[in-house]
Structures are given as C-alpha cells and as structure tokens.
Image 1 (cartoon, rainbow, N blue to C red):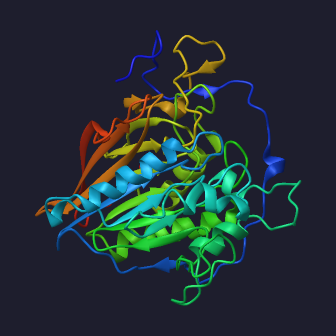
Image 2 (image 1 turned 120 degrees about the vertical axis):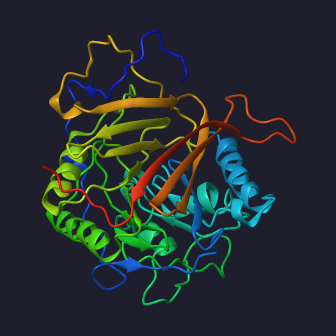
Length: 383
C-alpha cells in the first residue's frame, strides 16, 4: 500500500455534511439500438479460453495533458509489444469522464481523439458525470451526452459519421445506448449510466433494466463471469468524494431483487486506485475496484482514518475491506479472464506511472496483482 497519510482507513468512508446537487440530473438520450441494449462485438481474443482487456477512467482534462498521453501510450504498447499472442489485450473499457468539464464536442479532439490517436484497440465506454454535464455558457446549445453518443453509439450495426473533430472520416462506435450490456466469450459486462450529481443518480427505468440484465447474465450465460461497470464509485476512502450511498443502495437492491451477485464491480470518478473486497452472506467475495487515475491532473489521496469530517461507522460497510490502494500516481488496470475446469479465473494487474513521469524507454510499472474466481453455473441468491 501507499503511505501518503499518517492513519489510513481499512474500510470505506462516508463524507459527512455532503451537499445535495441532485438538481444537476440530466435526462438521458434516446437509445440507438433495440431493448435490451446488448452488443456482442467482434474481438481479437488472446486465446480460445482467454481474454485480456484494459480498464481506465477519468482520462480527460484540460490543464496537464501529459499523463493522458502517457496512459494511452502505455496501454497501447502492451498490445504492440506483446511477446506472445496470449499477452495481448483485446479492448479498452472506459469507466467514464472522457471529456472535462462538460462533455463538450469541442473538447473531444484535445482530450480524447489526440491522446488515443494511435491506440490500436477498440474502445468501449460508459459516461461519467463530466461527460453527461452540460455547459450553460456553451456557444451553441447541446443536449446531455450528445457528444458521447456521437462518438460511441451506433444504429443497427451501422457506424455513424462523428460530426466533430479534425478527422472528418471518423466513425462512431456501435454501442446501443449510454447504459448497455457487452457480451464477450468469457464475461457479460453490464455498463450503467450514473448521471451528473456527485454521488450519482440512476432512474427506476434503468434499475429495472439492470435487474433484468443481471438475471439474463446468470441464467443465459452461467459459464461466464458477470462484471458490472459504473462511473460513480460505490465504495471509496478518498478525501474528495468518499463512498456513494445512492450507488451502494442501488446495487444492493438490484442484487437482492435479481438474486444475482456479480463477480466484479468496476468504477472511476475518484482519481486514484482502490481495491475493496466485500463478503456477501453466501460467502462469495466480490472485488469493488476504483480505477479513476487515467489522466486527469488532479489526483485524490485517502482521507485520514481519524478525520472527523468522515465516518466509517455504518452497517453498510459490514464485510467491506480496503485491500490495497495507490494514490497520487496515474495508472490503468488489466483484467485477464481464463476459462478453467472449475470456472472463470479473473486475474488483475494494475500498472502505474510515477508522479514525475517516465524516462525515455521506461514503462509503467506493475503495482499489484490479484486473482478472483467465478464458478461455472453457480450464482448466489442473497439470503
């Protein structure tokens, strides 16, 4: 673990006296594909029973673009310089905040297209709060997530022209909605859109869809891992946001109603790396991973355990433990899924870049590795 603070918490924290900014909620755009918004993209897998993909969040920013570029370059190098086919990632899953501070089309070239110009793999995404926000002072009015959907969403397997940016031939992705399910050979990845407010809002309509998708994943593809992605981190011990009660409540209610607990939960929003584990009543251990140090210049350290403006005293945190963290350094996560005789093995590797950057010829270093398992055909109903 890092040791920036004198007294580090061992559990998530809630920030006391949180301001209510739910007035920032924005209506979601119309979907681009039919309900229930599923996409099974063609992927270059590292093997018939293996898949590696990369995860990054909060990659945008205006002040210091150097780390945006470094993260993109380092992720791309892992594909281009892989010594074996089995070491090659297949895609990047972005957990939101691609463009700061208001998701404007005019900022995509600087904050996303340019840094990822040479990234060699497909990029899939869910929106962050900054992607969904709207600049009230913009020269031309625009709807929430219009730039995001212009880049990532398509209609009926048809790529659409992206109406902004320097590359006039750029085409959109094929995602069917801003919340959607990605079907891969080894995992069902369910992505949520948690809107603009600091602690997130998910409507009843999306909640109903999410419950249905959890059930679908567990019953239709019991031999695959279930991965849930959302921008707002449910659990965190950082000083700026800390944990999101709305997201914890939303997830746990959905897990209870569906009777399905996923194998992994990924998020961003908090600008650091944190790995929590939660033990459910069934005995299942689920990692909740914050991966939000993808390039934005402001990073978040952890709050001190004895800071009276935060609290760990909540029944909601029962069974949740902070396993590892890295603050004040940018980084990204690789997830390697392997089919075994007993289920899907999920191996994670988090790579980081020192605060002073990289020297010529130097690569991001491996900060930590971890392994979890998803058992074939086995889904736990909460008791």
